[in-house]
Length: 89
Length: 89
Picture (spheres, rainbow over the protein chains, first blue to last red):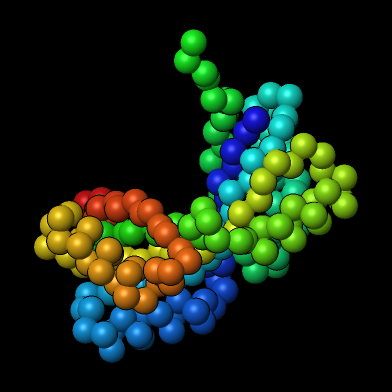
């Protein structure tokens, strides 16, 4: 079983209105020194795959197909092998 | 300058309808072996702070105050010291 953690952000050229709103709000709340805020999406997906190469291929395939808008968003991901709980004897 | 990467997820006891919808969609798209999907939010915040302890305190303070709903959500974060570009002579 693999756990993929997928971080989706806007491409650098794309305006991030939510990030700008949060930045303004922080300023109003007297947090000074805030330089930049960006908001993205975060997914955790647990799934079965034959090996780590197959797992990477599956993640890239379904992220491109379903999780991101390829025109405006980009992503990176971590992949962790999750073992079932080992029971003490 | 510090860069905080903040990962917001639902608390384990809270239903994650978006995650469930994505899981069903993946099943319909013939991805088999998907065990669990959860969707959260991801923030990147660049800001100035005196030192790493001050930076951690600032992140926790504004995340609690603005970025999460403390009733339903929880979060973790990474903190990176970002240096200005070093110019070649």
